[in-house]
Image (cartoon, rainbow, N blue to C red):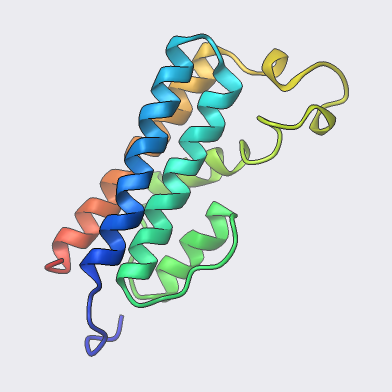
Amino acid sequence: MREDLPLDADELRRWREEADRALRSARIQAEAGVANWACFLAEQAAQLGLKGLLHGLGRGPWGHDLVRLAEMVSAAGVELPAAVSDSLKRLSRHYIPARYPDAHGAGSPGAHYSRADAEEAIADAEAALRFVDDTWESLGG
């Protein structure tokens, strides 16, 4: 990562706050038994967190794919632990199928998701946000 780029704590904070809201919403949906939306909101929490980190680093994140956003973080000189990368890969699978009926051969998205899926997605989002926070702290942000 280039050391001459100033860190933008305000921009990171804006995105990170929304990540927390999305994660809170994921927990609410999971408790209500709406696992597909819990999974999508967990994916959104991770996406908002990674975008916040990239904005904070002076990078202009683009897109919605967590795998691509992780590549952008790596390109900024930040190493992603394998466990975080795996979490992001799992979460990225929830971006479309959790919401759209035509993403499945039959049935509604809700019929394809379980409480265990929601719990895993929430844990993955928590891991991603811990990574964002730990990375930012290590940079002195």
